[in-house]
Image: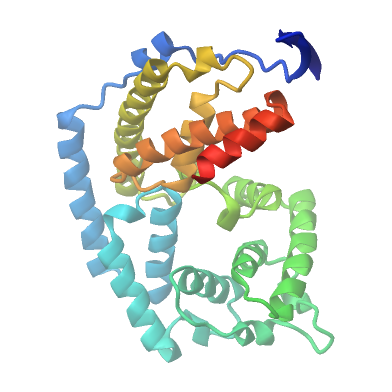
Amino acid sequence: EATNKISVEDNIVIRRSADYHPPIWDYDYVQSLRNDFDESYKERSSKLKEDVRMMFENVVDPLEKLELIDTIQRLGLSYHFGDEIKKTLKNISIDRSSTVASNKDNLYATALEFRLLRQHGYKVNQDVFACFMDEVGDIKASHNQDCKGLLNLYEASYHLLEGETMLENARKLAAKLLKQCLKVNNDHQYLWMLVEHALVLPLHWRMPRLEARWFIDVYEKKKDKNPIILELAILDYNIVQSMHQDDLRYASTWWKELGLGKTLSFARDRLMENFLWSVGMINTPQDGKGRRFQTKVNALITVIDDVYDVYGTLDELELFTDVVER
C-alpha cells in the first residue's frame, strides 16, 4: 500500500492508499448499452411461453416432468412458470410411491427428484439413496460408470441438511468417480460439459443469470433439445438483459450525480461490480426496483469500507462511527 502525508494544522497525517485502478466502464459507455429486443420479440416470447405451458399439461411421465423443470430452471425461465412448477412438484411429493423414486435402480431419476424437491422446500429423506450404497457405505460398483446418475447425485448432495453424513460421503465418492468419467468418457459432449462445469462449482452455488447464459450454449449442443424451449430461452435472456441495462443506466446516472467516485478518490469506484452483485442477490427480472436500490447500497458499502480500511485515521473513524450510530 502507498502512503500520503497531509499536513493538518502542523500535524502530519499519514494516509494509506490502495492505489485502486479507475473503472474500465465509464459513464458514456454504460449509457450507450442497448439491445434491439423490442415489443415484437416480446410478442413472440409470449407465444412460446404458452407452448411451454402446454408441455406441462401434455407430459405424463414423472421423470420427463422433472427434466422439463430442471431445464427451465437452468435456462433462467422458471419465473414464468412458477405455478406449473409448484403444481407439478406438489403432485410428485404427495404420491411418491408412483414417481421416479420408486425405481430403486435409477440413480439419475432418484437424485434429480431429490434435488428439485429439496430445492423447493419439500421434505425428502436422504435414505432414498441407501439402495445405491453397499454395506460399507460406498456407491455400488454397478453405478460407478453411470456418469449421468453420479452427476445428479453430486448436485443433489449440495442440498443436504446438517448431520446427513450419507450425502456428505456420497458427494466425495461421486466427485471422485466423475473425475474418472471425464478421463474415459468424452463421447457425450453435452454430459461431459455438465460434469466438468459441476466439478468446478456446483449448480446450487452458481449465480442464476450467469448460469442461464452458460447453459443456453450448452443446451443448444444437446441432440434431443427442445427447439421451442431453446428459442424462448434466447429471447428471454436478451429481453431480461435489456431490463438489466435499463437498471444499470439508472444506477450509473445516480452514481455520477452523487459524485462520490470523484470526490472520494481514495475509494473504489466500482459501480459495475456493485450492480453485478445486486443481480446475483436479486435475480428475478421483475424486481428491477430492488436491484436499483441494492446497487446503491452496495456502492455506499464499498465506499464506507474503504473509508475504514484505507483512508481514515482512528480519531476520524471514531467520530464517523458516532455520527452513523446517532
